[in-house]
Image: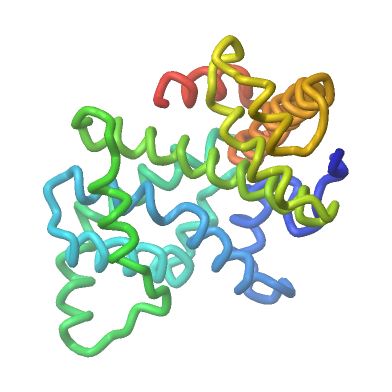
Length: 240
C-alpha cells in the first residue's frame, strides 16, 4: 500500500510554521506564513460569519487579520510551549475584531491592499452547505477547525495513493473512511478495486489505520509538545 513515510512538504508541527513566520530573515518565512493562512483561514471566516458579519465583511476581516498578524508581530506571542495553535488564532482574531477592525476598515477604504486574497465564493458555498445545526460562533469555529484538519488528512492520503501510482484505489476506498464497518459492502468495493473480497477487506483496514495515523499527526502539528494530544483529539471528535 502507499508509503507511510512523512512527506517533507509537511513540517514537524505547524507551530514551526508559525514561529518561522516571526523571523523575517529565515529562508522560507513568507511561504510558511502563506501556508498557515491558506490552511486555517476558513475556520476564522466561519467564526466571523456566525458572529453576524456579512460575507464581504467576513472576507475583509479575515484578510486584514492575517495581513496584520505578521506586520504587528503578533506571531511572536504564539509560544509553542503554551497551548494550541487553535486557541492562539481564535483569541488573536477576537482581539482583532474588538480592537483593530474599525481602524483596519478605515485604512482599507483609504487604499490599503490585503496581500491574502480569499475565495469568498467557495467559502460561502461551504458555509451554506454545512448541514450541522446552527452553532454559536465559538462552536462553529471549533467544528470548522476539526473539518479543516480532516480535509488536510484526506489530502495527504490522496497524495500518498497518487505517489504510489494508485489514485483510482483511493477514489474507490475513500467512502469507507466515514462509513460504519458493518455497513461496508466488500463485494462492491472488491469490484471497484478489481480484486477479491479478501483483498478489499485488507485494503479498507489499511486505509482506516493510515487515516487514524495521519489525522493524529495533523492534530499533533497544532498543539505544543507538552500538550494533551488525546484530549485535543477527543475535543475535535466531539466537534464533528
